[in-house]
Image (cartoon, rainbow, N blue to C red; front, side, top):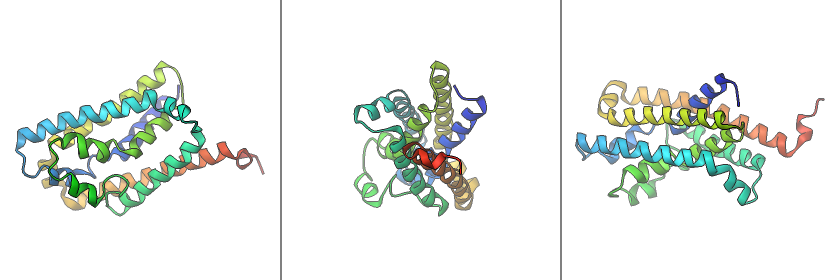
Length: 213
């Protein structure tokens, strides 16, 4: 189990990866024709789906890596690269192509299950969020560790649920400038997180890098 302050950092990191405020314009565009009841329904369904995906990654993600013979250090490097790509896009106030690209938007424009695809996956609980959860899961052990990360995930999901429900109000009061500022701030946090993962993975694969000079 980590220090309690570390779980606060994990919460902030997961909030940065999921970035519910940053994807508000996309979700608003996908639901532009819907009424208030439809938006509330999408918020509830998306929150449940994101919680299920991230909790599944928390409890079985590392086992899947072992099944495919992937070392956690290799996954740290690949996950760090993925998070860095996302962070670079967020620093430019854009949605990363690794999360949602133009072809997917066009193909899914009339999808009936918007709350699942593309809102929950890949917009919110995409490869970056799943990778981050798996990497944080292996940093500790014991029921307390997994319980506290589960609480972090549920706290992020609660914020996500509130953001989607109040997208019209938030859009009016934050404006595009406010959304861009928040997205860039989360991108900065995410870039630092990505570097930490990559550095840790490189040290694990090449122990000589951590040897004193």
